[in-house]
Image (cartoon, rainbow over all chains, first blue to last red; front, side, top):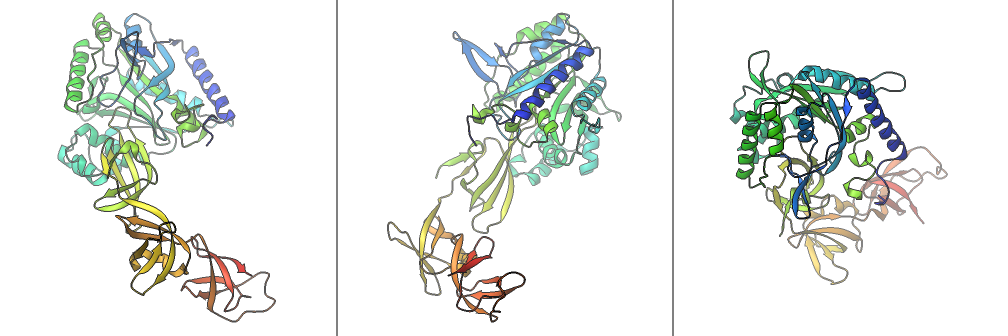
Amino acid sequence: MNKWQPGASLNTLHRRAVMLSSIREFFKQRSVLEVEVPVLGRSTVTDLNINSIATSSEGAQGYLQTSPEYFMKRLLASGSGDIYSMGKAFRDGEIGVKHNPEFTMLEWYRCGWDDHQLMSEVAELMKLLLAGEDGTTCDVIKMSYADCFFDSLGFDPHSADLRDLQLLAAKLASDSWLDETRANCLDLIFSIQIETQLPLGVAIIYDFPECQAALAQMGQNSVGQTISRRFEAFLNGVEIANGYLELIDANEQALRFERDTDARKCLDRPTLGVDQNLLAALNSGIPACAGVAIGLDRLLMGILGVDSIDQALAFSWLRC
Amino acid sequence: MANYSTNEFRSGLKVMLDGDPCSILENEFVKPGKGQAFSRVKLRNLKTSRVLEKTFKSGESLEGADVMDQDMQYLYTDGDFWYFMEPDTFEQHQATENAVGDALQWLSEQDVCMVTLYNGSPLSVMPPNHVEIEISETDPGLRGDTAQGGSKPAKLVTGAVVKVPLFLDQGDVIKVDTRTGEYQGRVK
């Protein structure tokens, strides 16, 4: 590998440009407004497992944003209506065949929509972007998180006993999972046993466990279990999108920030001041909405059929 | 030995796992968008040569293994041990039959092999990629049959059995690729 040269071929750069302009056309036709929000902010997310890259300007602490979500929600609270953003996001320490610490994220919000309406729009966008020259396109399937577990493993992830999940995780990985949290055990089992068996094309998985709600509203599934109104999309078994029926309750948001911060303290991870501007925006009132983010570098990997994110980027971190 | 964290796991790194030295073959960083990161690692157990797959949480660490690869010249065997010499220090090492393993069938005196030392003792031996060895037994050669078709087994003086073209005879010296066990040509 010649480090000075790009990882993406010239054809890939061309396909990337076509993808970006197709996305802009898609949203233009649907009257969704493109917005640009900062990648350098004074606050950042509190997520336990998302680490921000810290920096500073004239001594003032700043963070490269891990997603445009908080800024976009402040625009929604200001009456922007439907908006999308295509820009860079940064996550510390995420380096691998499918990860680059700097990546391109498409995120959009639909006011008055629920998560299932937004899943349909994700499916339409995927079909458009993955269409071949002959007009054929990818298959899209949609199934609940619980059904994935039933089909692959024969048990219900929402009612499963924590101990049983820990034992299964330990069997799949190592004994260090025996004292893991429910969320981490489910993630491990999903990654190893389910993700790898997802069909080719797009798979949209919805009704995530209550313990993995992140910024999604809670809800009930068809059998009355509490679930989070969160979904993910996978392309050829690779996670590419994460969406929510958005949490819009400021008190509940403040509570989740607090829980995240406590969890970070327990694990000796740096704790970060919560974003007071986001809380103020939620307090002032934000329309009911659904939002989703798609990793465009991974989507391009799927469009091109390449295995490594280095091949989808002009210069991945390996070459910077 | 130093400890290595999952983000330092690279192909070729030698680590201890469950008491055995292992060589890392692949390390895949896995991270669900909102979830905890982990590493799916493929390792070769250097004692058994078995390939294992293990999943570690990000930040978990393994102790480094005192394993070193070194080119050494094969000297001789006394039947119990096989003796190798470091070319620059002339230091000699004795390898057990277990450590020599499959290399045994290819070894001629003075061949330079790659010997893997674990805590200072030979753990495994890699023969040279190409060796030149005399045929000790094979069916008589068929004159003129040099072009194509057929092969026959030939036993070499080191013990290996290789498929060779029909025209070769006992006493001929041939070149063999030890990685595949395939005949490469006759040595004039």
